[in-house]
Structure formats: C-alpha cells, structure tokens
Amino acid sequence: MHKTLIVTNDFPPRPGGIQAFLHNMALRLEPGRIVVYASTWKRGSEGAAATAAFDADQPFTVVRDRSTMLLPTPRVTARASGLLREHGCTAVWFGAAAPLGLMAPALRRAGAERIVATTHGHEAGWAQLPGARQLLRRIGRGTDTLTYLGEYTRSRIAGALTPEAAARMVQLPPGVDEETFHPGSGGAQVRARLGLTDRPVVVCVSRLVPRKGQDTLILAMPRILRQVPDAVLLIVGGGPYAGDLEKLAADTGVAGSVRFTGPVPWAELPAHFGAGDVFAMPCRTRRGGLDVEGLGIVYLEASATGLPVVAGDSGGAPDAVLDGETGWVVRGGSADDAADRIVTLLQDPGLRRRMGERGRAWVEEKWRWDLLAGKLRELL
Image 1: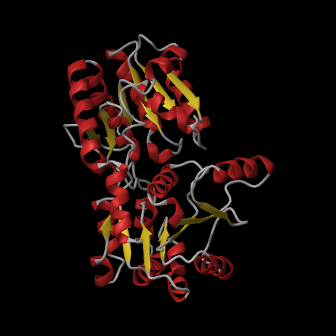
Image 2: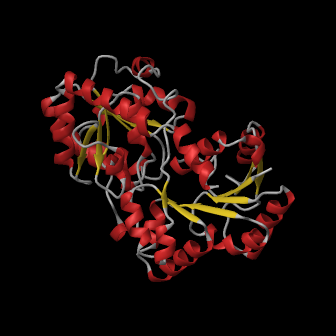
Image 3: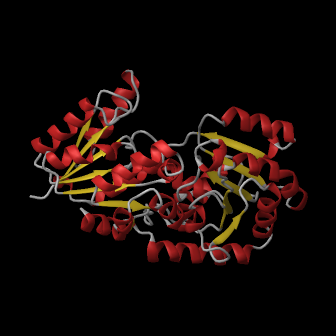
C-alpha cells in the first residue's frame, strides 16, 4: 500500500498558517497511509501534555523528535530514513522545502520513490542569499516536485533552481475550510461579549509581528475615526510585537478604539473573523525582501466569512485578493492608503456585502481544501 512520510517542523499544536496548511492537507489524505515526523512544540510538561493530547487525537501516526527544530543533521536524517522503512512509505512530503529538503537524496536511497517539497515565503528569501541559494538549488535537484504558493514566490524561487527543477514546479497553495469559515460563524456573539454590537469593526487576525501591519492599522485609526467616529480596530492574535502595538495605540491617542484579544483558540477564530465588518492586514515586505508574505491565508478565511478585505502588497498577498472584487490591495506600510479603503468600506454597506459575497463564491470555486488535497495526492 502506498504510504507517505510527512517531515516537518510546522505541525500543530504549534500555531501558525503553515501548520494549519499541513494539518488540513494531512487530514484529507487517507489516514492509514500517512505518517508524520515532526519536531517537538514546546519543552516542559505543559507543552508535552498539549502535544501528546493533540497527537493522540489524530487519525494518523505522529512521531515527535526530541528537538524543537528539525534540521537535516545525520541523526535526523537517519531517523527519517528509519521511519520511512519501518512504515513502508514510498513517498515523502517535506512540509517546508528549506532546509529539510536537503535530506531528499538520503531518503531516496532509503526507498522513497516520490519526493515533494512545499515552498513558502522564506524560500523566496533564501533565493536571494548566495549560500542559501545554492542549498535551494540542491533541494530542487533532489526532489521530484517543488510546490509554490503563487506567482510571486514561484518567480523568485525558480531563479535559484536548475532549469529542469524550475520546470517541475507546481502550484499548491493552502486552502480554506468553507464549512468552518462562513458568514454565520458566531461573530455576533463575539461582538456582544466585547461590547461592540453597535460599532463598525475593522478586524485583523494574525500573529503580532511587524510584517503583518497591525501598526499601520493603528496609525490609520485617527483618520478613520475622523470620518467614522465610533469605529473600532479589533486585533486578534498574540506574538512578540504585542507590547509595541499597545504602546503605539496609547501614543497615537486611539487606545480607546483599539481592542487586543490576545491569542485565541483555533476553534474560536472563525467567530472572531465574523465579528468584523471589514478585514484588514496591510502587510509589508521587510529586511530587503527576506521577510515577506508568502500568500496570506487569512484574507481567504475572511472572504469565506463574507468580509471584504484590505490587503498589503507584500510578496504573494495580492494572490489572495481579487483586487476591486473581493477587496483591495494597498501599499504595505501606508496608513493613508489603508485608511482610505477602510473608510470607503465602512461607509458603504452595499459595497461590503457585494465584495463579501464575491469573496465567498471565489473561495468555493478555487480555494477549497478538497480540491487542493486532490492535487497533492496526484503529486505523491
């Protein structure tokens, strides 16, 4: 029986978009044909307990390495090769091509007949650095297929590969569970709990890191409030930038119109999307192109929830928006551009409804998990 070994650092309960991508794909492959080899999420009893509970709940085998970060060392390579042989796997899927894809030749020798590696935003950054670029070239040679999220990441990664490896690239973006993210996801209850029932809400759901642009939204709030005085910015998520953002809201004089939820359990995320009238995340590229948005699945989750979106122009983020139809793409880091589009949407309920309905239809047409998982099955 054909079986696949998934090798990854990005797997729940570790939070994040790549983690959700891999988990959703794994759930839609045949459970009896999947073995996951993943790093440990957190050291300590609390992290171990959460990880053990998550793993026990999965319909497939999950094997955790002792380290919190898998690297293509001899030890990890030997463990992956041993799991491949032990479970009779004939295919390998690297959840992120760099750096784990460097193990491809060894896994080929251990019996892998098909090797697929998925690229995200960070591989586009690797492609710009001479040393990392050579490693990416090796990964391309050692695998059967490198997948890419969208045209932005494809064009940058392909330049680092041999022409033959570049020709074998295939698009495989993450999908959206349209049955989980939908207009009736519970947003009214979240608004009521937060005391926002009668206020226009701009919601941003993401990790709190500088690239995502929550600071741009806070800087846009004075202009938004001049035209929509009762508007509120709802910032959902946790991350290392939280303290800076709270200070920025206070320094900008808009702390009373900005709400921070902190980290939210996965099961409650759809309702928090639904609490908004407009979804906005004006992400920007940083560090000379090394810190870039690969796609921005949150825009599609917002569209599935029936919200118009305002996206930044970082990397592949525009691939997740039909500009002018499901929302707008603005210059990342431009508070004025973000404010203009947000105010337009807050003041026009009909436009919000039309863009939200178009976004929902687009997700159902193109971004459903079952469609994308079918493509992965073919590649493997």
